[in-house]
Each structure stands twice: as structure tokens, then as C-alpha cells.
Image (tube, rainbow, N blue to C red):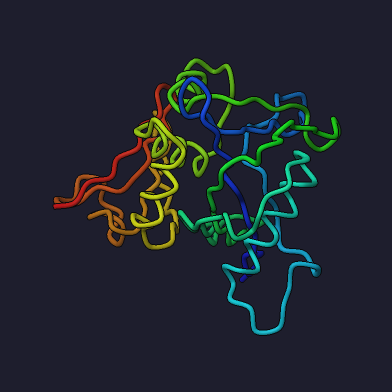
Length: 220
């Protein structure tokens, strides 16, 4: 079994006319526009510390990657944990990624290298979701879910205060494919263990359909 690679990702927030988040566009591959992501990447040797907790190692990786990919210098003590995503076993390359959120530094001029990262944008959560649905930009499932969470907040301080308290158990997606697209079940969904999409009970899933995507999280 291929073990997931420890990784760290940071959602950088700022207050403009309303709450905005930073998205980076990966460079195009195979003629397809690059996906839009948060700054982040896998843990490197420089991030390791003897006896450090996995989340702390991932936090250092997220800070380092943010500097490398966007030029932003973040205070590691300002990063708060909001989720953890573990790639399914069926994937050829797997990651165990801690997601953090942080306030943009006072000097938050973004600089990308134009190689690995093709571009960036500050964008409101609702605008990012709309652009995804209109195929103006492409979000990966973890990014889509995180942006959906952020859409309910008007200010960065509110998101940084409330999201850590809501941190769910680690996301270990179980993917069920159909003609209209895929349904990704997450722990806490009534159908997670059985794979029955119509199971009675709580919902915690992403409908990654051709149009539109829809995230559901309820408790019963």
C-alpha cells in the first residue's frame, strides 16, 4: 500500500470590501488549464523537528510553501487548523494534508514564479464558487469544500475563530461514480461504510456532478 505523503496547505484570508481568499493557479498540463489551489505542498526535510506532532510539521511545510509559491511570509503561530484530508487508497499518489487558515500579512503583495504557479487571484468565496460552476476556474474537491465553508463568513476574524472549533474528523473520501459524475462520501455520512447513497441519516458528501457541484453536511 502506498503511504500518503505528509503535507500542509494554508488558506490565506484578507478583508477587502468583504472576505477574500488567495487562490494560485497551477501551470497548465496536457493542454488543460491549471487547477486553482491554496498555497501548500508536501513536507520537506527542513520542516521536520524531533518529536514534533504531525500537525506542527505540516504547519511549517505550509508556511514554507506559501513563501515559495506566493512570496507571502506567514507567522506559523498565526495558522489555525481547519481540516485534514487523506487521499483514498486507490489513488496512485497519496497525500495526508493538514489544512490551515491564516490572515494575510500586512504586506501581502503576491509574487508567483510563472513556472510551477502560473497566476494568482484574491477572490471572495461566493465568487470563487460561481466561477467554478461557470467553468471559469477549476477547483479540486478539498478546495471546493473549504471555499464553501468560507462563503458564510463576512470577515476573516470570524472564519479564523469559528472554523477550528468545527474541525471534522479527517476526510477520507470514498468515491462512487455514476453517469452524472461522482459522489464523494466523507466520514459522518450515513452511507459512508455501506456505500449506499440513499442510506437514511446524516449527510457528509460532495456531489461532483457535471453541473453543478454540491456539498452537503448535515447531522441527524
